Each structure stands twice: as structure tokens, then as C-alpha cells.
Image 1 (cartoon, rainbow, N blue to C red):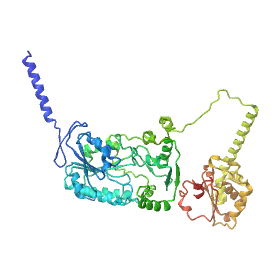
Image 2 (cartoon, one colour):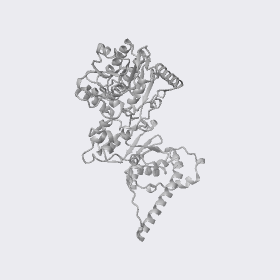
Image 3 (cartoon, rainbow, N blue to C red):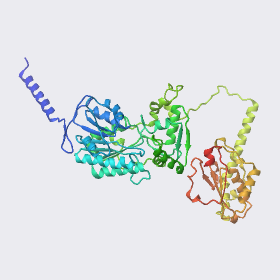
Image 4 (tube, rainbow, N blue to C red):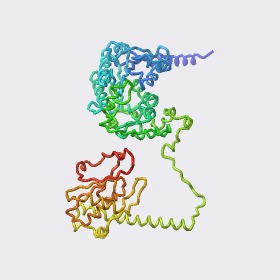
Length: 552
């Protein structure tokens, strides 16, 4: 039989545990005073939260619905089309996911969806206008009706999922209406939590699958728009929305959810090509042509191809609000898109490449490089002599080039009339006595360089100088041999009569001349603004025989 002392100790410990459990409350009092019962979670658990998720039938909806349902929440899903909601039935246990038919223009149906909820997610959004709904109808007016219903029934939390770069002053209608929707939500419900995800990649996305699923890519900005792609599933946006919902301190705050690395659309397109082992054709169409064509197709066709606003967004990079909170504030490390391309794009491979494994970490960092090593290197006397001659010729070219580098700037300055005689360098003066030659610049096949013969270059230079004066400006585009011929001709002109020369060239070796301006035919408009309208005559030799290069 236990001693009285032991019995007293057990009784005291039991009383302490009972009291501790009693004072450890599992009831949470919300902002409006509603009691919410907290549970440990699990697919079949029944907690106290009732959450309405508008737009749950979209790409992001399934991830947040599943995470809420397995935490014991009752999730109300307003829907428009019966077949679009089927996949959401299994995201929660029986009775945890409730469906209500609604219409964004029907206020009573919206109120019925939020009447019993203590939190509302608004994921509704559209990338392009349709025949029934404009972007203003979906983003601004739809948000206004939802927030008014939230205020009417005194809902505790309203989480508004917007878009990156949302700005009421944006040139894009999509970003503009998203920005206005944020302003409407905050004006009616100041505790609104705004979430701005970056472009999302994954299943059913509008990024990877859009690039992989077509043969011809029509763009208007050479795929130069830049953004931070983000993953929607449990490790990124879905987990972030769940944490925001269960943390009441996030009320009234703004979150920017973006990936760890910045990519251009061109870089992602190359990534997709490598993953699916296909080379898709990229066609860049001027904005003035593609934008009206896209607007017409969006109005005429009953399936979506491209809208005018999507063309406009190609010229807008992602803008990040420095004051907004990020994944870091939620304790989440976002994933990089390069680690998920195999998972989402394997189905786009042909049967010949379907079973190939994903790229290794080393292959992701750099291109494959093959280096052949000879165990015993032995060359004949003729090969050694040829090699010595090659190195001697290379050294001579380098010496000539360095001599040219030393004297080119003062000589070119004199050609522009900016060097005073007393300021001239005696070394440069010696160099200036000698004519320039293209021998200092070897032809580079990677740059598609093939110099004109001296006779041809001089004939073209004479044509350009015919009628030129000190007030003239001559532009030389991808034709350095003619530029050298012009410099040689101008050596015999009086300094005060020499025209100004401008060399537009991709090869940085010609930067030894002060007249050099870097030029890339892929970006023909990225030039100094002071050159606009300043050229009197131009000579052009397109470096590549392609329609794209010839046009630009």
C-alpha cells in the first residue's frame, strides 16, 4: 500500500496538471470577438475556421484550399462552372469543402458565400479581357463587391491576392486595374492583407507550359522582360498564404512574393528548349503591328491566343516594392525555377528523350565543355615551324594593335577638331604619320566579320565624303573597313573641314577609337539619345544574312 506522503505527491501533481490544462486555452478570440476553436490539424479534424476562397478554381486555388482543409477549416468555394471545380472535391475530407454557385455581378450570391466565414481569400484575376468581362469588371468592380460583403458581415480577415507590379498609373491595363483593386480594398477594409506574387510557374501555369506548348513564339520585345518567377506549391506561395492566414499580425500588411533569382523571358525560353530537347521558332514582331493584331484576335476568336495588354506587358519589368514584406519575413526560402523545369516539362519531350534524367548541378551551372587531352604530344618539324610562324604573326598583330591603341585617341580627336597642337602627344604624332590599316584587326568569324578589299573600302569612303563638310556627321554601321578608309582619307583634309565620324560596331576591339558606339542588332534602339536625327549619311553592312538582322 502506498504511503500517505506518496499519495499526497501524486494528488498534488494531478491537480497541477488538471489546472494547467484548464488554463491552456484552445479558444482563440478574433478581431470581432468571435471564438475560434483551435485544433491540432489533420484531414479529418474539425476546427473553428470557416474560410471562403474566391477564384479557387484557378492555378493557385488548389494549393491554399488543400492546406486550409487539412488544418480543420471549413472551406467555402464559390464557383461558376460545374466542371471547373471537380478537382477541388478531394482537397479536403467529406464536408470540409463546400461549394456555392455564384456570379461576380450577383451581389446576393457573393454575400451568401461570405455570410458564415471569418476569413476571405480573393484569388480572382484574369490576364486578358473576355467578351463578357473586362479587366475593370473582374479586378476592380468584382473586388469592390466582395469587400463590401466582407464589411457587411463583419468578416475578421480579408486576404487580397493581387499581382506583382500592380500600379494604378501603369501603362498596362492589367497592372493598372490590379493597383486600383488594392486601393479599393484598403479604402473599404483597412485591415486588408495584400499579397503580390511574381509570375507563377508550375502545373497549369502561364509561363513554362505556354513556352513549351507552342512551335512559334510571337513576341514584340525580343523576350527581354525581366522578373522573379515563383513556385506556387507548398514550399512557396501556398505555404506563405497559409502562414499569413493563421498569423493575425499580418493584417493590413503588404507582401511581395518573388523567386530568388531574376530571369529574362529569353533565358527561361532557352531553359525550356534544353529541357524538352526541342528548338522552337522565335518571331519578333514590332509592337505597332503585334498589338493591334493581338487585340483583334482576342475579340474575334473564341479561344485565347494573345491580347493587346499582354504585348504591352512585354515591355515592363517586374517592379518590387521595397517597403513590402517578403518570404523572408514569413520564414520561407523560395525555390529557383531551374530546379523544377524537369518536373513540369518532361511531358513535352518526344519519346526519344522522355526517359533521360534531369540535368546535374554542374550542367545547370555551365554548358558542357569537351577538352581532349593527348597523353604524348609530338609534332613534326613542319608543324612546329607553322606554329612558330603563327605565334610570330600573332605577336606582330598584337604589337600593331597596341601601337594603334596608343595613337588612335589623339589622332581621332584631331579628326574631330578637339586637340590643340600644343597638347598633342609626340608618340601619337609619330603614329599619326602612318596610315591606318585593317591588318591590326583580324577577322572574327564569331562576329561574322569579313573585311572589304582596300579598293572597295576607299571607293565607298569617297562616296561618303562627297559633299561632306565640318558640319556633317557620317554613320558607319558594322563596316569597320570603310571607317578605316575614311580615317585615312581625312588625314589629308584640313582639321577645320573634317566631318564627324560615328562607328556603330559590336566588336569591342574598335573601342580604341573615340568614335566607337556599341551596337547590337538584337537591340537596335539601345543607342545614345544624342545621336537621334544627327546623322547626315549612313553606310550599313548587316553582319548576318537573316531576315531579322536585315530588317533591323
